Length: 439
Ligand SMILES: *[C@@H]1O[C@H](CO)[C@@H](O)[C@H](O)[C@H]1NC(C)=O
Ligand SMILES: *[C@@H]1O[C@H](CO)[C@@H](O)[C@H](O)[C@H]1NC(C)=O
Ligand SMILES: CC(=O)N[C@H]1CO[C@H](CO)[C@@H](O)[C@@H]1O
Image (cartoon, rainbow, N blue to C red; front, side):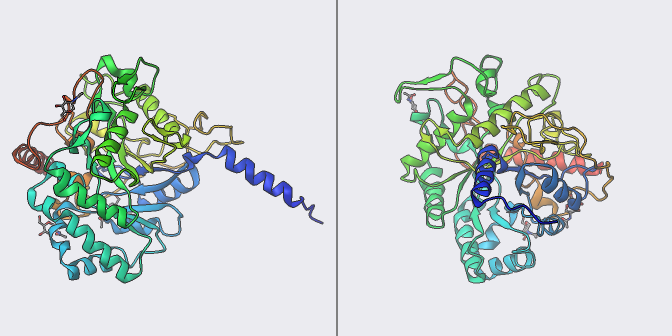
């Protein structure tokens, strides 16, 4: 059959349409946590994400080989995490080379490894030894990467918003004294040199109160007025991002890219947390996707884009202790969406805005039983607190700040890197030890 050739201009036209109707939302990431005993095998996850969703990048909380392998040739970007406990050893160039040899080299570039996150919320969790070694380890790992010729892989380290002294109003924000010049300035300098992103975990969920519900959920509300700039903030996400920006600017690094390494809203929770429900989760995630795909940026960062990773891909039944923690997922372990925000490919013709599209509910994957303890993929103590990537492992409310009308009531008051956090870490380890008895 003689093919009918469209004139080249028609192809250009189609391309243009594609560019217009597929917004930057095609670039949305998720955190792929694995603390569930009912999660599907990584190969199914990779196939599902690639064929059924707009998700084009994942972040994992370790360097799980089967996950990294499963995403080979998928086109999905994979960011991996150095467990917090490994940080001090990686200041040794030989150890760093060995780490790259063992965890990156066998899989790259078949798997498009994107970021190596050095630890998770290290400033927040401590101890001081890890904090002191953080930026040196990042630099040494970077050198090892360059030696291998893996120049495209970036190094960063995600932070809780406990790094902020205050976020209300954003114009008055700053990093906590001590951490600011001690760790964050050298880190930002490194990120700037290597064109890497500054990673933050803003959770408006932890800034929630009934009075500011709409502000936290991207819904219409009176807003938060910042006298110094004359800006009225209409959502807490913008407020938090601008607070980070102002803090970076104070240290002389306004132009380092900001990556949202984690943010989310649980669709269920403890009875007291009635705001953890699917309607709110859909409002927040929907608003977030619209926000980051619009390219609008924030009031102080107009037009800037933020690479964004939703927390989390799956509900994880072994997380806790709160029910909220188990219910941050976009999907159930059988791949059915917990709520619809247009993250699945629309089944038929693309609608003008995939964000507004509601999508089919059955992705066609059978529930699968998965084996193995969730803790067996890394040494136990290297995974305890942050490596599992849980927002709520922070003492309640510390991950975010600044509900309107409160002056940063949610940020912990202890001085950087000291005792309070140790108590929390001990408590968390204890609870996980107890939990592991039941696994
Ligand atoms: C600015 O923040 C500091 C603490 O970082 C606080 O003491 C001061 O009152 C704040 N000023 C305004 C105008 O909110
Ligand atoms: C990697 O993750 C998978 C899926 O969660 C899990 O079954 C497996 O035990 C993990 N393996 C390793 C080596 O960490
Ligand atoms: C792979 C491994 O065991 N890494 C580290 C885990 O954490 C301890 C300290 O807590 C280190 O000694 C290990 O090297």
